[in-house]
Image 1 (cartoon, rainbow, N blue to C red):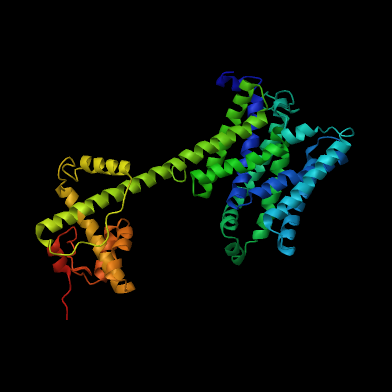
Image 2 (cartoon, rainbow, N blue to C red):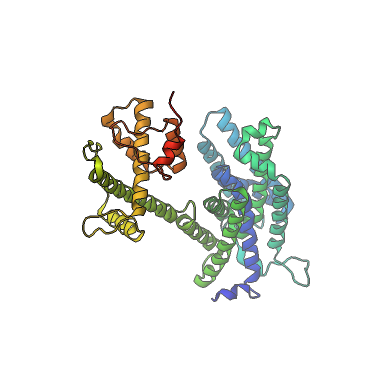
Length: 447
Protein backbone atom coordinates (compact mmCIF):
# COMPACT_ATOMS: atom_id res chain seq x y z
CA UNK A 1 0.00 0.00 0.00
CA UNK A 2 1.29 3.46 -0.89
CA UNK A 3 1.53 6.13 1.79
CA UNK A 4 -1.04 8.31 0.04
CA UNK A 5 -3.48 5.42 0.31
CA UNK A 6 -3.99 6.38 3.95
CA UNK A 7 -6.11 9.32 2.79
CA UNK A 8 -8.53 7.41 0.60
CA UNK A 9 -12.21 6.91 1.42
CA UNK A 10 -11.70 3.65 3.34
CA UNK A 11 -8.55 4.44 5.31
CA UNK A 12 -9.12 8.10 6.24
CA UNK A 13 -11.76 7.39 8.95
CA UNK A 14 -9.44 4.82 10.54
CA UNK A 15 -6.57 7.30 10.44
CA UNK A 16 -8.67 10.03 12.09
CA UNK A 17 -9.72 7.73 14.93
CA UNK A 18 -6.16 6.44 15.43
CA UNK A 19 -4.70 9.97 15.55
CA UNK A 20 -7.37 11.22 17.96
CA UNK A 21 -6.91 8.23 20.28
CA UNK A 22 -3.12 8.61 20.27
CA UNK A 23 -3.26 12.38 20.87
CA UNK A 24 -5.79 11.95 23.69
CA UNK A 25 -3.60 9.44 25.49
CA UNK A 26 -0.43 11.47 24.87
CA UNK A 27 -1.97 14.62 26.34
CA UNK A 28 -2.77 13.18 29.76
CA UNK A 29 0.11 10.69 29.53
CA UNK A 30 2.63 13.55 29.42
CA UNK A 31 1.55 14.59 32.93
CA UNK A 32 1.65 11.00 34.15
CA UNK A 33 5.23 10.63 32.91
CA UNK A 34 6.31 13.98 34.38
CA UNK A 35 4.75 13.05 37.73
CA UNK A 36 6.51 9.65 37.59
CA UNK A 37 3.11 7.98 37.64
CA UNK A 38 3.34 5.95 34.45
CA UNK A 39 2.53 2.74 36.28
CA UNK A 40 -0.52 4.44 37.78
CA UNK A 41 -1.70 5.14 34.26
CA UNK A 42 -1.24 1.45 33.56
CA UNK A 43 -3.19 0.63 36.72
CA UNK A 44 -6.07 2.91 35.78
CA UNK A 45 -6.21 1.67 32.18
CA UNK A 46 -6.60 -1.88 33.51
CA UNK A 47 -8.53 -1.06 36.67
CA UNK A 48 -11.37 0.65 34.78
CA UNK A 49 -12.25 -2.64 33.08
CA UNK A 50 -14.71 -3.88 35.76
CA UNK A 51 -16.37 -0.46 35.85
CA UNK A 52 -16.66 -0.59 32.08
CA UNK A 53 -18.24 -4.05 32.19
CA UNK A 54 -20.66 -3.07 34.96
CA UNK A 55 -21.70 -0.05 32.92
CA UNK A 56 -22.40 -2.35 29.96
CA UNK A 57 -24.31 -4.76 32.18
CA UNK A 58 -26.53 -2.04 33.68
CA UNK A 59 -27.26 -0.28 30.40
CA UNK A 60 -27.44 -3.33 28.14
CA UNK A 61 -25.84 -1.36 25.31
CA UNK A 62 -22.72 0.62 24.43
CA UNK A 63 -23.96 4.07 25.44
CA UNK A 64 -21.15 6.33 26.55
CA UNK A 65 -22.68 7.71 29.77
CA UNK A 66 -23.09 4.50 31.83
CA UNK A 67 -19.79 3.20 30.48
CA UNK A 68 -18.05 6.45 31.44
CA UNK A 69 -19.58 6.63 34.91
CA UNK A 70 -18.63 3.04 35.71
CA UNK A 71 -15.10 3.48 34.41
CA UNK A 72 -14.67 6.80 36.23
CA UNK A 73 -15.79 5.23 39.52
CA UNK A 74 -13.39 2.32 38.98
CA UNK A 75 -10.54 4.70 38.11
CA UNK A 76 -11.04 6.83 41.21
CA UNK A 77 -11.35 3.66 43.26
CA UNK A 78 -8.05 2.45 41.81
CA UNK A 79 -6.30 5.70 42.69
CA UNK A 80 -7.78 5.90 46.19
CA UNK A 81 -7.10 2.23 46.97
CA UNK A 82 -3.52 2.56 45.79
CA UNK A 83 -3.00 5.70 47.87
CA UNK A 84 -4.58 4.03 50.94
CA UNK A 85 -2.33 0.96 50.69
CA UNK A 86 0.74 3.13 50.22
CA UNK A 87 0.03 5.55 53.07
CA UNK A 88 -1.80 3.45 55.65
CA UNK A 89 -0.47 -0.06 55.14
CA UNK A 90 3.18 0.91 54.47
CA UNK A 91 3.23 -0.97 51.19
CA UNK A 92 5.58 0.20 48.47
CA UNK A 93 3.87 2.32 45.82
CA UNK A 94 4.65 0.03 42.90
CA UNK A 95 3.54 -3.02 44.88
CA UNK A 96 0.29 -1.29 45.89
CA UNK A 97 -0.50 -0.39 42.29
CA UNK A 98 0.33 -3.91 41.17
CA UNK A 99 -2.03 -5.45 43.73
CA UNK A 100 -4.91 -3.10 42.91
CA UNK A 101 -4.82 -3.08 39.13
CA UNK A 102 -4.16 -6.80 38.67
CA UNK A 103 -7.06 -7.65 40.98
CA UNK A 104 -9.46 -5.26 39.26
CA UNK A 105 -8.32 -6.26 35.77
CA UNK A 106 -8.79 -9.96 36.55
CA UNK A 107 -12.24 -9.16 37.96
CA UNK A 108 -13.12 -7.33 34.76
CA UNK A 109 -11.98 -10.25 32.58
CA UNK A 110 -14.10 -12.64 34.66
CA UNK A 111 -17.14 -10.37 34.31
CA UNK A 112 -16.62 -10.23 30.55
CA UNK A 113 -16.43 -13.99 30.26
CA UNK A 114 -19.38 -14.51 32.57
CA UNK A 115 -21.75 -12.01 31.01
CA UNK A 116 -20.54 -11.86 27.40
CA UNK A 117 -23.68 -13.66 26.21
CA UNK A 118 -26.00 -11.15 27.90
CA UNK A 119 -24.34 -7.95 26.69
CA UNK A 120 -22.76 -6.92 23.41
CA UNK A 121 -19.17 -7.02 24.65
CA UNK A 122 -16.33 -8.85 22.94
CA UNK A 123 -13.22 -9.48 25.10
CA UNK A 124 -10.87 -9.10 22.14
CA UNK A 125 -12.43 -5.73 21.33
CA UNK A 126 -11.82 -4.48 24.86
CA UNK A 127 -8.31 -5.87 25.08
CA UNK A 128 -6.99 -5.19 21.57
CA UNK A 129 -9.35 -2.60 20.06
CA UNK A 130 -11.23 -2.54 16.77
CA UNK A 131 -10.15 0.66 15.09
CA UNK A 132 -10.69 -1.00 11.70
CA UNK A 133 -14.47 -0.72 12.21
CA UNK A 134 -14.27 3.09 12.08
CA UNK A 135 -14.81 2.99 8.31
CA UNK A 136 -18.32 1.50 8.71
CA UNK A 137 -19.36 2.56 12.23
CA UNK A 138 -20.45 6.12 11.41
CA UNK A 139 -22.12 8.83 13.46
CA UNK A 140 -25.80 9.34 12.82
CA UNK A 141 -25.35 13.04 12.09
CA UNK A 142 -23.37 14.73 9.34
CA UNK A 143 -20.74 17.50 9.28
CA UNK A 144 -20.76 19.41 5.99
CA UNK A 145 -22.36 16.41 4.37
CA UNK A 146 -19.77 13.93 5.76
CA UNK A 147 -20.60 11.37 8.43
CA UNK A 148 -17.55 11.00 10.73
CA UNK A 149 -16.79 7.76 12.59
CA UNK A 150 -18.77 7.44 15.81
CA UNK A 151 -15.67 6.89 17.92
CA UNK A 152 -14.00 9.93 16.32
CA UNK A 153 -16.79 12.18 17.63
CA UNK A 154 -16.39 10.74 21.14
CA UNK A 155 -12.61 11.11 21.03
CA UNK A 156 -12.85 14.67 19.72
CA UNK A 157 -15.19 15.66 22.57
CA UNK A 158 -12.92 14.06 25.18
CA UNK A 159 -9.84 15.71 23.64
CA UNK A 160 -11.57 19.09 23.79
CA UNK A 161 -12.49 18.50 27.45
CA UNK A 162 -8.94 17.45 28.39
CA UNK A 163 -7.40 20.33 26.47
CA UNK A 164 -9.82 22.82 27.99
CA UNK A 165 -9.16 21.65 31.55
CA UNK A 166 -5.38 21.78 31.02
CA UNK A 167 -5.56 25.24 29.44
CA UNK A 168 -7.78 26.52 32.26
CA UNK A 169 -5.63 25.05 35.03
CA UNK A 170 -2.24 25.27 33.31
CA UNK A 171 -0.39 26.91 36.20
CA UNK A 172 -2.01 24.65 38.77
CA UNK A 173 -1.05 21.50 36.85
CA UNK A 174 2.44 22.88 36.27
CA UNK A 175 3.07 23.62 39.93
CA UNK A 176 1.52 20.44 41.34
CA UNK A 177 3.34 18.29 38.79
CA UNK A 178 6.81 19.55 39.73
CA UNK A 179 6.50 20.73 43.35
CA UNK A 180 3.39 19.49 45.18
CA UNK A 181 4.53 20.70 48.66
CA UNK A 182 5.03 24.22 47.30
CA UNK A 183 1.60 24.08 45.67
CA UNK A 184 0.02 23.07 49.00
CA UNK A 185 1.82 25.90 50.79
CA UNK A 186 0.40 28.37 48.24
CA UNK A 187 -3.15 27.13 48.81
CA UNK A 188 -3.41 24.84 45.78
CA UNK A 189 -4.90 21.44 46.54
CA UNK A 190 -2.41 19.03 45.02
CA UNK A 191 -4.61 16.08 46.04
CA UNK A 192 -7.58 17.59 44.23
CA UNK A 193 -5.44 18.14 41.11
CA UNK A 194 -4.23 14.56 41.40
CA UNK A 195 -7.80 13.26 41.48
CA UNK A 196 -8.74 15.52 38.56
CA UNK A 197 -5.87 14.08 36.52
CA UNK A 198 -7.02 10.58 37.44
CA UNK A 199 -10.50 11.44 36.24
CA UNK A 200 -9.12 12.78 32.95
CA UNK A 201 -7.07 9.63 32.57
CA UNK A 202 -10.15 7.49 33.14
CA UNK A 203 -12.17 9.53 30.64
CA UNK A 204 -9.43 9.29 28.03
CA UNK A 205 -8.92 5.58 28.63
CA UNK A 206 -12.60 4.76 28.20
CA UNK A 207 -12.88 6.85 25.05
CA UNK A 208 -9.82 5.12 23.59
CA UNK A 209 -10.89 1.54 24.34
CA UNK A 210 -12.52 0.98 20.96
CA UNK A 211 -9.52 2.43 19.12
CA UNK A 212 -6.53 0.84 20.81
CA UNK A 213 -7.94 -1.48 23.51
CA UNK A 214 -7.28 -1.55 27.23
CA UNK A 215 -3.82 -3.14 26.87
CA UNK A 216 -2.40 -1.06 24.05
CA UNK A 217 -3.74 2.17 25.53
CA UNK A 218 -0.90 1.86 28.04
CA UNK A 219 1.64 2.33 25.25
CA UNK A 220 -0.09 5.52 24.12
CA UNK A 221 -0.25 6.80 27.70
CA UNK A 222 3.45 6.28 28.40
CA UNK A 223 5.58 6.23 25.24
CA UNK A 224 4.70 9.64 23.69
CA UNK A 225 5.19 11.36 27.05
CA UNK A 226 8.55 9.64 27.47
CA UNK A 227 9.53 10.84 24.00
CA UNK A 228 8.53 14.37 24.98
CA UNK A 229 10.81 14.33 28.03
CA UNK A 230 13.71 13.26 25.79
CA UNK A 231 13.13 16.13 23.38
CA UNK A 232 12.32 19.01 25.75
CA UNK A 233 12.86 20.23 29.30
CA UNK A 234 9.84 22.56 29.29
CA UNK A 235 6.26 21.46 29.94
CA UNK A 236 4.84 22.96 26.74
CA UNK A 237 7.67 21.44 24.72
CA UNK A 238 7.06 18.03 26.29
CA UNK A 239 3.35 18.15 25.44
CA UNK A 240 3.93 19.31 21.86
CA UNK A 241 6.62 16.70 21.28
CA UNK A 242 4.35 14.02 22.73
CA UNK A 243 1.56 15.08 20.37
CA UNK A 244 3.90 14.90 17.40
CA UNK A 245 5.12 11.45 18.46
CA UNK A 246 1.51 10.28 18.88
CA UNK A 247 0.57 11.44 15.38
CA UNK A 248 3.63 9.75 13.86
CA UNK A 249 2.85 6.54 15.75
CA UNK A 250 -0.73 6.52 14.50
CA UNK A 251 0.14 7.33 10.88
CA UNK A 252 3.01 4.87 10.53
CA UNK A 253 1.15 2.28 12.60
CA UNK A 254 -1.82 2.34 10.22
CA UNK A 255 0.40 2.34 7.15
CA UNK A 256 2.46 -0.58 8.45
CA UNK A 257 -0.63 -2.53 9.53
CA UNK A 258 -2.23 -2.24 6.11
CA UNK A 259 1.04 -3.06 4.37
CA UNK A 260 1.62 -6.15 6.55
CA UNK A 261 -2.07 -7.04 6.98
CA UNK A 262 -1.92 -7.08 10.78
CA UNK A 263 -3.44 -5.35 13.82
CA UNK A 264 -3.59 -1.56 13.58
CA UNK A 265 -3.47 -1.11 17.36
CA UNK A 266 -0.47 -3.41 17.65
CA UNK A 267 1.43 -1.59 14.91
CA UNK A 268 0.61 1.74 16.53
CA UNK A 269 2.31 0.56 19.73
CA UNK A 270 5.26 -0.85 17.74
CA UNK A 271 5.56 2.41 15.80
CA UNK A 272 5.53 4.34 19.09
CA UNK A 273 8.39 2.17 20.28
CA UNK A 274 10.25 2.87 17.05
CA UNK A 275 9.78 6.63 17.43
CA UNK A 276 11.01 6.34 21.01
CA UNK A 277 14.11 4.44 19.83
CA UNK A 278 14.89 7.20 17.31
CA UNK A 279 14.40 9.90 19.96
CA UNK A 280 16.52 7.93 22.43
CA UNK A 281 19.40 7.79 19.97
CA UNK A 282 19.17 11.22 18.29
CA UNK A 283 17.49 13.60 20.79
CA UNK A 284 19.64 16.78 20.72
CA UNK A 285 20.16 17.12 24.48
CA UNK A 286 19.32 13.77 26.07
CA UNK A 287 19.90 11.41 23.15
CA UNK A 288 22.49 8.65 23.31
CA UNK A 289 24.41 9.70 20.18
CA UNK A 290 24.70 13.44 21.01
CA UNK A 291 25.73 12.45 24.54
CA UNK A 292 28.47 10.20 23.18
CA UNK A 293 29.59 12.91 20.76
CA UNK A 294 29.79 15.45 23.59
CA UNK A 295 31.84 13.01 25.65
CA UNK A 296 34.12 12.40 22.66
CA UNK A 297 34.56 16.14 22.15
CA UNK A 298 35.38 16.56 25.86
CA UNK A 299 37.87 13.68 25.75
CA UNK A 300 39.53 15.16 22.66
CA UNK A 301 39.80 18.57 24.31
CA UNK A 302 41.37 17.05 27.42
CA UNK A 303 43.92 15.11 25.35
CA UNK A 304 44.70 18.22 23.30
CA UNK A 305 45.25 20.28 26.44
CA UNK A 306 47.42 17.55 27.96
CA UNK A 307 49.61 17.60 24.86
CA UNK A 308 49.76 21.40 24.89
CA UNK A 309 50.63 21.35 28.60
CA UNK A 310 53.53 18.95 28.03
CA UNK A 311 54.85 21.02 25.12
CA UNK A 312 54.53 24.29 27.03
CA UNK A 313 56.37 22.90 30.05
CA UNK A 314 59.09 21.65 27.73
CA UNK A 315 59.27 25.14 26.24
CA UNK A 316 59.59 26.61 29.74
CA UNK A 317 62.42 24.26 30.62
CA UNK A 318 64.24 25.07 27.38
CA UNK A 319 63.90 28.85 27.81
CA UNK A 320 65.28 29.69 31.19
CA UNK A 321 63.48 27.58 33.80
CA UNK A 322 65.26 24.26 33.38
CA UNK A 323 66.76 24.51 36.85
CA UNK A 324 63.32 24.19 38.39
CA UNK A 325 62.14 20.76 39.51
CA UNK A 326 59.75 19.16 37.00
CA UNK A 327 56.12 18.90 38.02
CA UNK A 328 55.31 15.74 39.93
CA UNK A 329 53.31 13.14 38.12
CA UNK A 330 53.23 12.29 34.42
CA UNK A 331 50.71 13.07 31.67
CA UNK A 332 47.87 10.54 31.89
CA UNK A 333 47.69 7.71 29.41
CA UNK A 334 45.15 8.10 26.63
CA UNK A 335 44.14 5.61 23.93
CA UNK A 336 46.36 5.75 20.86
CA UNK A 337 43.47 6.53 18.49
CA UNK A 338 42.40 9.44 20.71
CA UNK A 339 45.93 10.84 20.74
CA UNK A 340 46.07 10.59 16.94
CA UNK A 341 42.79 12.50 16.60
CA UNK A 342 43.95 15.11 19.13
CA UNK A 343 47.25 15.66 17.32
CA UNK A 344 45.45 15.95 14.01
CA UNK A 345 43.07 18.56 15.42
CA UNK A 346 45.96 20.50 16.94
CA UNK A 347 47.78 20.46 13.63
CA UNK A 348 44.74 21.51 11.60
CA UNK A 349 43.83 24.14 14.20
CA UNK A 350 47.25 25.78 13.92
CA UNK A 351 48.30 25.11 17.53
CA UNK A 352 51.30 22.90 16.67
CA UNK A 353 53.63 23.29 13.70
CA UNK A 354 54.35 19.61 13.09
CA UNK A 355 54.38 16.24 14.86
CA UNK A 356 56.62 14.53 12.30
CA UNK A 357 59.83 15.74 13.97
CA UNK A 358 60.28 17.67 17.21
CA UNK A 359 56.83 19.23 17.85
CA UNK A 360 56.77 22.99 18.38
CA UNK A 361 54.01 25.23 19.55
CA UNK A 362 52.76 28.03 17.35
CA UNK A 363 51.70 31.36 18.83
CA UNK A 364 48.13 30.08 19.13
CA UNK A 365 49.28 26.87 20.79
CA UNK A 366 51.52 28.86 23.15
CA UNK A 367 48.53 30.92 24.31
CA UNK A 368 46.42 27.81 24.95
CA UNK A 369 49.31 26.04 26.74
CA UNK A 370 50.01 29.10 28.89
CA UNK A 371 46.37 29.35 29.95
CA UNK A 372 46.25 25.66 30.87
CA UNK A 373 49.45 25.72 32.93
CA UNK A 374 48.35 28.95 34.59
CA UNK A 375 45.06 27.35 35.68
CA UNK A 376 46.91 24.27 36.90
CA UNK A 377 49.38 26.16 39.07
CA UNK A 378 46.80 28.54 40.51
CA UNK A 379 44.68 25.57 41.53
CA UNK A 380 47.73 23.95 43.14
CA UNK A 381 48.18 27.09 45.23
CA UNK A 382 44.54 27.01 46.25
CA UNK A 383 44.75 23.34 47.26
CA UNK A 384 47.94 23.98 49.19
CA UNK A 385 46.72 27.12 51.00
CA UNK A 386 43.11 26.19 51.69
CA UNK A 387 43.28 22.40 52.10
CA UNK A 388 46.88 22.02 53.30
CA UNK A 389 47.62 19.29 50.74
CA UNK A 390 51.33 18.38 50.61
CA UNK A 391 53.24 19.63 47.57
CA UNK A 392 53.95 16.05 46.44
CA UNK A 393 50.19 15.37 46.14
CA UNK A 394 49.10 18.53 44.34
CA UNK A 395 49.63 17.62 40.69
CA UNK A 396 46.99 14.91 40.18
CA UNK A 397 43.98 16.74 41.68
CA UNK A 398 45.02 19.96 39.94
CA UNK A 399 45.31 18.09 36.64
CA UNK A 400 41.79 16.72 36.97
CA UNK A 401 40.35 20.21 37.58
CA UNK A 402 42.42 22.32 35.18
CA UNK A 403 40.37 21.31 32.12
CA UNK A 404 37.13 22.66 33.60
CA UNK A 405 38.18 26.12 34.79
CA UNK A 406 37.21 28.95 32.45
CA UNK A 407 39.02 32.27 32.22
CA UNK A 408 36.52 34.14 34.39
CA UNK A 409 36.83 31.62 37.21
CA UNK A 410 40.62 31.64 36.83
CA UNK A 411 40.69 35.44 37.10
CA UNK A 412 38.58 35.36 40.26
CA UNK A 413 40.75 32.60 41.70
CA UNK A 414 43.88 34.65 41.05
CA UNK A 415 42.35 37.67 42.78
CA UNK A 416 41.32 35.53 45.76
CA UNK A 417 44.89 34.26 46.04
CA UNK A 418 46.25 37.83 45.87
CA UNK A 419 47.78 37.33 42.39
CA UNK A 420 50.67 35.00 43.31
CA UNK A 421 53.75 34.83 41.11
CA UNK A 422 54.97 31.30 41.94
CA UNK A 423 53.29 27.99 42.77
CA UNK A 424 54.12 25.76 45.80
CA UNK A 425 56.94 24.13 43.79
CA UNK A 426 58.57 27.47 43.02
CA UNK A 427 57.53 27.56 39.38
CA UNK A 428 56.48 30.87 37.87
CA UNK A 429 52.77 31.43 37.27
CA UNK A 430 52.34 32.24 33.54
CA UNK A 431 50.98 35.67 32.77
CA UNK A 432 47.24 36.04 32.03
CA UNK A 433 46.12 36.58 28.42
CA UNK A 434 46.57 40.37 28.71
CA UNK A 435 50.21 39.91 29.72
CA UNK A 436 52.45 40.12 32.78
CA UNK A 437 52.58 43.91 32.69
CA UNK A 438 48.85 44.17 33.00
CA UNK A 439 48.85 41.73 35.91
CA UNK A 440 51.52 43.70 37.76
CA UNK A 441 49.68 46.92 37.03
CA UNK A 442 46.44 45.58 38.49
CA UNK A 443 48.15 44.07 41.54
CA UNK A 444 47.44 46.21 44.62
CA UNK A 445 50.45 47.37 46.61
CA UNK A 446 51.34 45.40 49.71
CA UNK A 447 51.37 47.22 53.02
